[in-house]
Image (cartoon, rainbow, N blue to C red; front, side, top):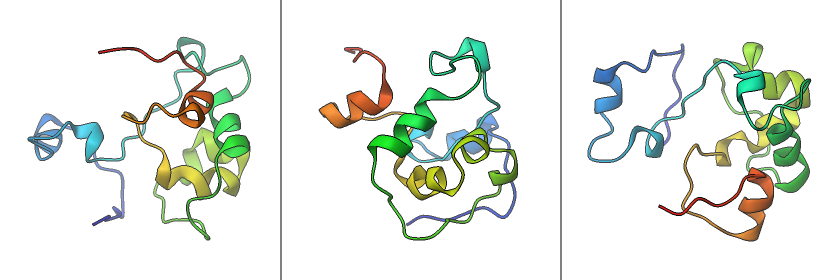
Length: 112
């Protein structure tokens, strides 16, 4: 079941603990301020990950999903609604090592 919040909720230890026994990234959709130059996806002006997501992935939904961060979202600012249509399928951690996932991530696969 997917539930959307009406307002952002801080990722406190108590909230993240609700995901147990799973990892919080396997349960919650988390957002953060763009790290810009500290991120390997930032090209100096744009988020290359957002560009690849829109270019390489088909839409996951037919209409813009509810979103409490859209007004502040770098992906939305940069790619518009096309990013939002793909957002529901984006995860922080993936166990999918398909060639498509590798191409979208733009990062080398790291073995555990």
